[in-house]
Amino acid sequence: MKKLTRDFYNRDTLIVAKDLLGKILVHNINGKSLSGKIVEVEAYKGISDKAAHSYNGRRTKRTEVMYGISGISYVFMIYGIYNCFNITTEKEGIPTAILVRALEPVDNLDELSFNRFNKHYIELSKYQRKNITNGPGKLCQALLIDRKQNGEDLCNNELYILDSNLHNFKIQSSKRIGIDYAEEAADYLWRFYIKDNIYVSKI
Image 1 (cartoon, rainbow, N blue to C red):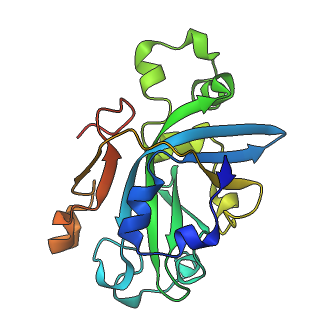
Image 2: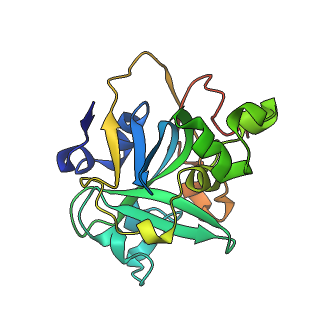
Image 3: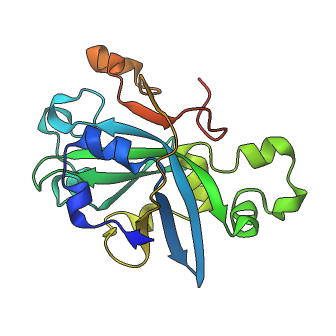
């Protein structure tokens, strides 16, 4: 499988969001390769999107990475506890990004399991297996993604996305989750996910 190139990310955010489904997110860390298939994402369209951190041209130390080139990791923390992994898109100066909401585990299941629950994968309950990477904070914990990966170039060899050539699934869309404050933007159907995948968020 080939690593996605800058050209992949340097396109309209809504197109990239849908095209990310089925691709493989990889984090090489501590001599191990942690990975998962992307099954759920949300698009954030920048200056005109009231749900985006960069809405109305907001530019802070936290959001600065959104204004850079495409294909860069934007990791922020919510509730002071959970990390969220995002990918910058479009041309430099256009602060758009895609939140990866859920993954389907691919390999190194024991490593993912220990990172999440401090147990071997075989020891997990059915509920724990389903909840191993089915949320933005959960997948970051499982793949050991935190603020240290903020600004990481996804075209390098530590944190990146592989083109899996998987297309045998149906994409569905819905409103984004947890942005009721965003007025009309709360109704945009910019959450995309693989239909019937068990790791997709239940709302």
